[in-house]
Amino acid sequence: MTENLNRSLVLVSRPEGLVGDDNFEVRSGPVPTPGPGEVLIRVTWLSFDPTQRGWLLPGGTYKAPLELGEVMQAYAVGQVVESNNSKFKPGVHVQGMLSWQDWHVSDGTDLTIVPEGVEPKAMLGVYGTTGLTAYFGLTDVGQPVAGETVVVSGAAGATGSVAGQIAKILGCQTIGVAGGSEKCSWLVERAGFDAAIDYKSQRVGSRLDELAPGGVDVFFDNVGGETLNSVLKRIRRHARIVLCGSISTGYVPGHLPPGPSNYFNLCLRSSRMQGFLLGDYRERFEEGRRTMRDWVEAGRIVYEEDIQEGLENAPKTLRRLFEGANLGKQLLKVADPPLAG
Ligand SMILES: NC(=O)c1ccc[n+]([C@@H]2O[C@H](COP(=O)([O-])OP(=O)(O)OC[C@H]3O[C@@H](n4cnc5c(N)ncnc54)[C@H](OP(=O)(O)O)[C@@H]3O)[C@@H](O)[C@H]2O)c1
Image 1 (tube, rainbow, N blue to C red):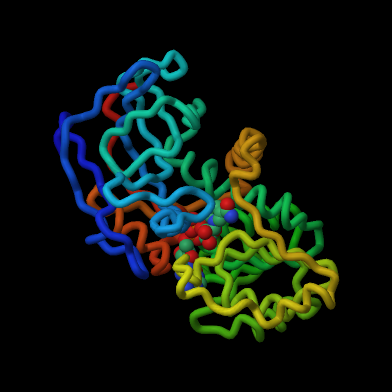
Image 2 (cartoon, rainbow, N blue to C red):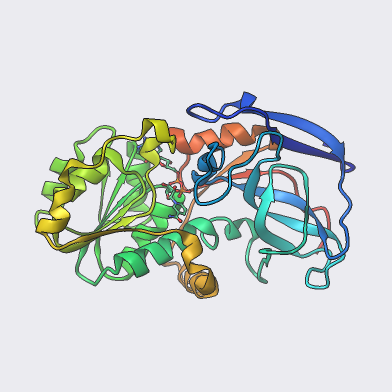
């Protein structure tokens, strides 16, 4: 990459299943010029989020679909290099909805300045989408109470690992479900979960019977499918199922499985299952970031980052989430910040 060139990854065909490299084309052009009120951002780090697969669906999801010929959008951080907007001085690091390209022009809407003392890429993980999703989803939707049993699926991922650690902070017995022995060891030895179930080599239901014979009070579900059904079979009275994600579906609507057959336990055990979107909590993001920062700085929450490099590797990196290749937050480094300070 040369500093006076802008590479963009443009959607040229819609994926059928997993995102393919050939669904995107790398196009090069001049570095864009910011107009009145706009800023020019050097993109430094890209966040990868399973929801991006949904943005590629022709009908869209909770937001309009990316159209063919458009540059892929992404949560990202970057450094403001040129500014026609008094809120953003050159040199500041910003986080927001940017794109798969070297340079991004923004009018400043929805950009957040990275606070002093915070590493910019942490604004994509523990202080970004995934950390805040864990915080609001668990505390506001799951409402765990000390002494309860909390189960988290996708537990070694960016969202799940934080959700489980918050449950521990709140005094709950916490069980994580993740794929592979390495991830399960990390959950117990490093993240402080009470136990972990490797769904790839163990039966989730029978392990839950051993680990939580009294049943499950809160299930923070990132995965859906069979795992959700196994937990539904074992919920206690007044359980709360937090429907955060359903990555086992691949987020491809044509391949959605039938609903969980054990759903009627929600009725029999006076329980609830509630979905949420992080955007529902926009007004409370500052509170979430402040709380997460206190916990991280006190060493009560640890986090991992899986770092890939090179803008051209963005489609491959998005696939890693669906292949379970990441431990912790999936990031990609695009560039070092060009301005000092
Ligand atoms: N509701 C919201 O507003 C909101 C916001 C952010 C994220 N989310 C959801 O939160 C979940 C986690 O997102 P994240 O960004 O933190 O990603 P992540 O958990 O860091 O990465 C995805 C993980 O999903 C697991 N996975 C992939 N395919 C699977 C399958 N077929 N069965 C079981 N597990 C599978 C893999 O872990 P294993 O190796 O353990 O299989 C993979 O590492 C996703 O469902 C996402 O859509 C929701």
